[in-house]
Image (cartoon, rainbow, N blue to C red; front, side, top):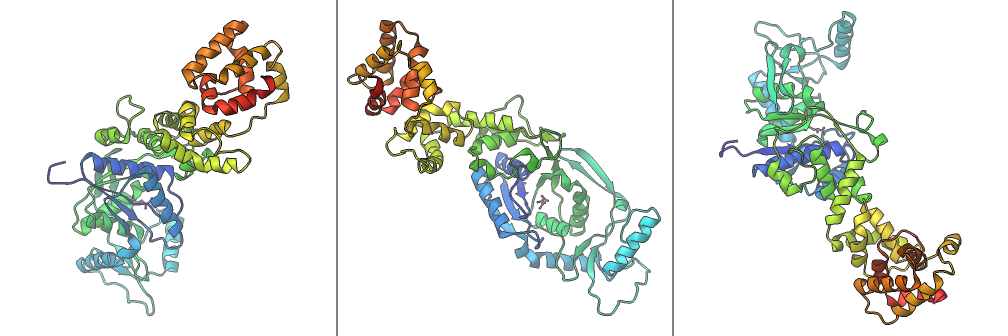
Amino acid sequence: MTATSQVRTRFAPSPTGYLHVGGARTALYCWAYARHFGGVFILRIEDTDLERSTPQAVQAILDGMQWLGLAHDEGPFYQMQRMDRYRAALAKLLDGGAAYHCYSSPAEVEAMRERQRAAGDKPRYDGTWRPEPGKTLPAIPADRTPVIRFRNPQEGAVTWDDLVKGPITIANGEMDDLVIARPDGTPTYNFCVAVDDWEMQITHVIRGDDHVNNTPRQINILQALGAPLPRYGHLPMILGTDGEKLSKRHGAVSVMDYPAQGFLPEAMLNYLARLGWSHGDDEVFSIEQMCAWFDLDHLSKSPAQFNPEKLAWLNAHYIKQADNARLAALASPQMTQMTQEGAQFADGPPLEAVIALMKDRAATVNELATAAMLFYRAPAPDAALLAQHLTDAVRPALADFARQCTDIAWNRDALAAMLKTVLASHKLKMPQLAMPLRLLLTGQLQTPSIDAVVELIGRQTVLSRLQPVA
Ligand code: GLU
């Protein structure tokens, strides 16, 4: 880009459902590209499909973008609030002869298509109302409101150098005269997109490759409007692990299901960044690094496969890195919920200290919250396990340990050293003492390091839980 042309990208979702993973990836790439060049990222809500658009879906998009931290610089623009702009552009095309009123009824258009299909031709509008030099148009039928059609060029071809797929050429002969306004005057999808991309001075249209077929139509409309053309880049779709198009069958596809499952936004961003783009062999990088590196030269040409295990792996990585207070704030609502089911949240050790100890083992915040409950539940060890581990051979050592707990300096190092001396004097190995201790103190056999667990549980609670053997 030259210094004078600022990068302007847009994310233009239709609010007809949740913000899905594919949409979020598109949004991320548009946003990161604008950020990379110090440009402008625009959010545009394409809500002209009145039957399918809902305010809840708009909110889901805004929530998803906010969770991911993909802030827009302009917008959100709502297409339904821009009808006057589309009408003005329609009038401009009609005036210049690049669009025309078409009075063919839906039944006539259908009959036309039937005839073409029967003759083995591609169904298309036959141009009855298309003005041509020297052509006399039919008489306008009474009581019929026309649609407006775009007078698509019939010769030549539309070519663009796709930023992902390379040069693409579509012959104009492949496209018929698109309806750009319905009988009630409302503009149609491709027309609104073209007008908006023009008026919002979009320089790079980055979107899913389900829109490749719309691009030549939009280019022709932009050219008829006298508008400069943006560059286009079409991202290949995202597949599930079975190679089928990503869908609910593959698990959560709504972005907002991920915070609910305990994923961190930085993990999702890192994952989406790699789902169709690469920077050498880098797998783990921050959003700041992505913005510094992001380009359109390393977008993948082939479909990406959504891999939930890799996302979980990244999430585990970011949980390890995350600030304890932040994780505690994320985990505590669920933990409060779990405490209402019988545990005592308030009496346990400080949550941040528990999180610090446990976060290395969790792939999600939800897992972390569940694991952290270890410290807030009265232990109820399984009797058979207790019988197995709490043998007569270890009871004296446990009693010794409990006795020493009464006046030892209460920190992990001192506790570890004391454990060692108890083991040595009773000629036991660590697991022989650690296992019954774990059972008595937490009710389970799997816990982080026993000295750390003992320290966190606290002197008074440890002593009362060891009472039966002391
Ligand atoms: N509204 C379209 C969609 O949700 C995107 C249009 C575009 O990016 O040009 O798929």
